[in-house]
Image 1: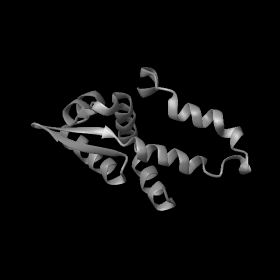
Image 2: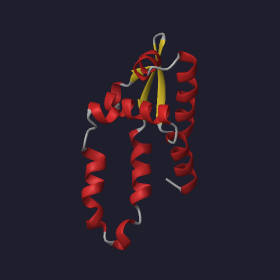
Image 3: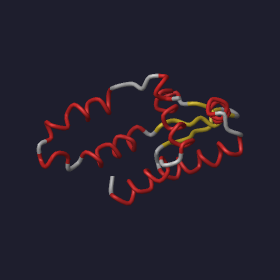
Image 4: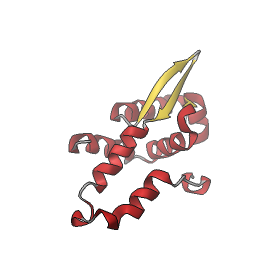
Length: 117
């Protein structure tokens, strides 16, 4: 991930509803969630959720696919991992072992329901 891509991703995540959506999609895993379910869980109107989903998709942090009459959104784990790698790339002045616990936690620790609310 380059700096321009990181800025677009951080811009998308800098809004409360979009950050909440990404975190919900990360938890939902590869099965993703339908737009209506996302709107309901985020307590946002369908038109408002559509705006946020388009912004997140434009940033590359989520993807969509049509399943019958629904559009299913999933987290783009590769892009999210790239964002984490971008942040950790020059970690600790060339001593990556200092950042290893943080990097391991970022890729492997599931968020709790309390953290997502």
